[in-house]
Length: 388
Image 1 (cartoon, rainbow, N blue to C red):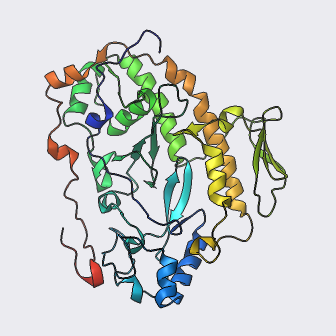
Image 2: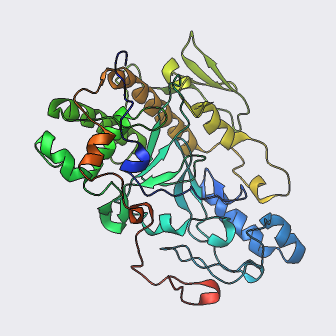
Image 3: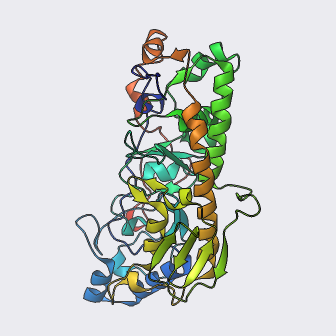
């Protein structure tokens, strides 16, 4: 945005003050692109005994067969030590494993080095998680990601939009919504603020705010479309007819190579071919990594024989093809929004100094800590009631 500076724009760390480090799994096998593999991996773990079970777990300092931990909030997994665990696999849940890569996770705290229970307590159908990327000034990828799923993406911190379940108590600087309502002529919703933030956030985390109601409306509309594409909730996104990607040559049973032909606008998985694939979708990067390549590698990388990660589909599942076609569509549509983002030069700004003068900043330290949330009994180790 030539000629526009945001030296005193408030930072995201103040506008959405509560943040949590993403969960750290500590081992690869409790996540997978398909849920059936996770069930088979769990079954293999609990059928093994003694040293064999320990080796399959891939123990760390945080988790061994004898680590005592409680249930994840809202989940029903066992709480006995893994050395004695039996029974069916806890029902896998959908998570955001990497940017734009939706996978599955066994929601069992005994398998997760750092599960971040405070995130699980507020993860519901109302929640939206924002994750800041490492986009630099010259990067073309998004500065902020948004998802309805629990994000495992690293290294950025996770900022839930709401501090409590049910969409209660927005994770926004206290008084921000009321302060914005005065110049805008209406009270924006928490989702509107997040949408605006997605549209205008700068590398480094500055979030320019404006007093201009028309500019605000433009930014919010743009941000809501970005939200819809990133969350993929409800109606599935589609490119216009003639531009929609299709499988032109059948994909092999287990592709091992991925290649893009710019002249043909075709994506090759070995001899399988998908087209048209816009160059903008192929070039789409987050944290300096091409999204489509990372997505493909997560499904085709070789696993060490004898490990639980080696338990995977024998052939490429058809649902993965559908997910790939949708991912291409999402990346292409997001890339189309970049020129509109660049045109959103924020005028008549609300600066950090303005927010300090109004008492919105600095935020109280309590706003940077999780809310006291315990809406249901949580089972601790060995079936004891967890005290929080």
